[in-house]
Length: 165
Image (cartoon, rainbow, N blue to C red; front, side, top):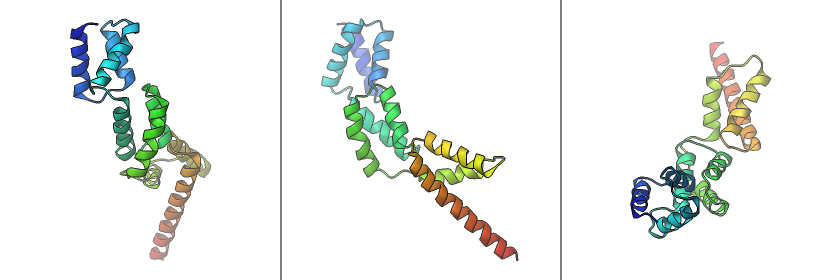
C-alpha cells in the first residue's frame, strides 16, 4: 500500500464529502490495483475521512431542501453513486421527515405551468405529469398537486373575469 496515494486520498476526502463511486474512481485513476481499493476505503473510513452515511445524508438533504428533488430521484442518484441500500433506506425517510423543501411540489408545478405551452389541455397535463415524475415524485403525488394548481388557476381566472365585468 502506497502512503503517498493514501495521503492524496485523505486530502481528496477532506475537501468535500465523497461518494463510494467517486473515491473508487479517484483510486483507479491513480492506478491502484482493484484488489487494494477496498483496503484504502477501509483505512479512510477508519480515519473518518470517508463515511458513506455522512455523504448520503448531505446529498439527500441538499437535493431535497435546496433543489426540491423527490425521494425517488434522490434514491436513484445515491444508488448510482454506489451508496449501500441499507444506508439509503435509513437516511432518506429521516431527511424527508426533518427537512422542509424550499419549494413545494405545487409551487414547482405552478412555476413550470406558467412557462409551458402545449397545443391541447391534455398535452399540457401530460407534460406537467412528466415534469413532476421526472423530479422524483410519485405519480399520485404529482396528480394531486397538479389538480390543486389547476383549480387555483381556474379560480384566479374567474376572479379576474368578474373584476372586468
